[in-house]
Length: 394
Ligand SMILES: *Cc1c(COP(=O)(O)O)cnc(C)c1O
Image 1: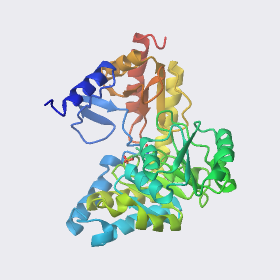
Image 2: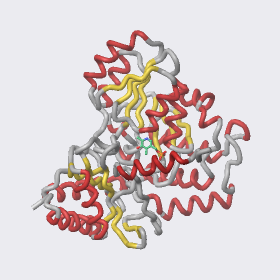
Image 3: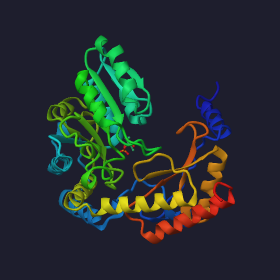
């Protein structure tokens, strides 16, 4: 008999042949503006640690104290062994921060989407989904067994036409979109989507993983940015990006949140976040609740870096967030650019097909509040050098 796992060798070889094999670098230091990566000290231009909270002493202290008080694990799913008070505290703090009626936490943002979508739509229902939505939204939609209608990226007019065509044939309907699209840094036209949701009697859900801690007053997210509190039923958030820890949540309408406590499968069938994660997230929310300092610094750094990159002659796309795609186009050139940057002490990832369309390869720079002006200047110098060397700029 042949080896039943032999297909893996073939599939792996296929990935290598097509340039899609992923090599994962090893980080040997705490997360921060500088990292030790594969033994080399490099400037960190690729993490989602927007506010530098991943190694913030206040979060570390909160996690340690919580361990001393409450231990590590929640020991079972919350519906069976009882929910720990610290999870409820976090949910209350998140709802207050987001100015939402209620919030519920999950183990991750990915799980929040998997919990939410199948709980609110099913067979006989329809989902209108932006064509560039995150993988976890796509998977959540598929799990739901509702009809999925993809609409052209950020195109509210095209969505209206699709709503007119399809809405009437289904029972419940959901419009779902990423808040910030992480490859280009553009944002969803949420006010138009809210109008359409109301006109066509749809539920409205936004996944604000990259908007949390970034957009809106003091980082309250895209709903706050557009002043749409109360008009977006479901805001999915993650605590693994700007909040610097791990975990996901849904903030929004109280009925929806209560329903998810009854019917969100990752809530019912998977244990909650650990005690130190939860305590660290709580500390992160409190820091953001008390001061806009980190978010202000993030934007100051973003403005400075983008302006300098444009002055150097780079095409940095249409981003309206700290995500800065340095558009290079060619896949091989982009790989080479990233490799040369690493040699120059800058860790910035090449992003290419199939994550973005063919011919639209780019280096994605992620700016953080933790970067000092000197850090940004060091990064700019490396971009200038490699850009000239590879004939991208002059
Ligand atoms: C990163 C991301 C997620 C996943 O969040 P985790 O908490 O890391 O699981 C979900 N949705 C979007 C849009 C994201 O960018």
